[in-house]
Each structure stands twice: as C-alpha cells, then as structure tokens.
Length: 90
Image (cartoon, rainbow, N blue to C red; front, side, top):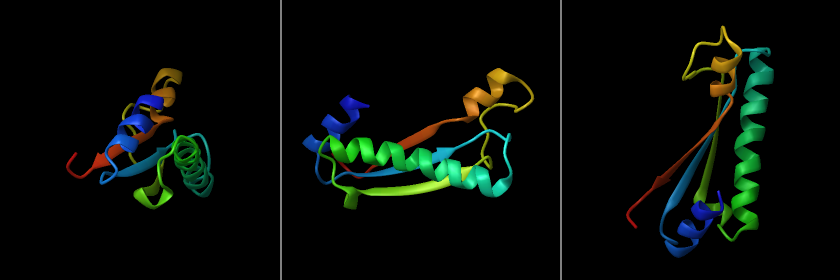
C-alpha cells in the first residue's frame, strides 16, 4: 500500500474510496462492523503515510458483494478484502 500512499501524496486532488468486505461467516451486523474496521485500518495506514483523511470515503459492504462462493476456504479468503478506488483526474 505504500506505493498507493505515495501516488496519492503526489496527486493531491485525487480522492479515495475504501470499501471493506467480509465472507459470510458472521452475523450480518458483525460482517458490517468487520467490513468497517477493515476499511478504517486502510484509512489509518494511508493517513500515517501522508494522505489526508478528508480525501477518503470509507464504506462497509460486509458480505453483500462476494467475489467468490463462500462454500470453500479459498472462496471465503477471497471475500475478506478491502477495495480501494482512486477517483478524479491525476
């Protein structure tokens, strides 16, 4: 993630969208909270590396948008993720 922080520092007009995801192993409220905590962890990392918090939008999707089936360990691992989208013109 350090290269992302560097890129964002060099392009201070860009904004960033950070979305936390989970697998389906918890209750819906727990998934929502865990997704939020994942997004927050990434935001804190970027902030520690010089990216302004005002440029970040944090979102939790919990287990609502899986990228793989949750019926295998591999699929669940793929669904436990954070997606970063850089928005704006560099």
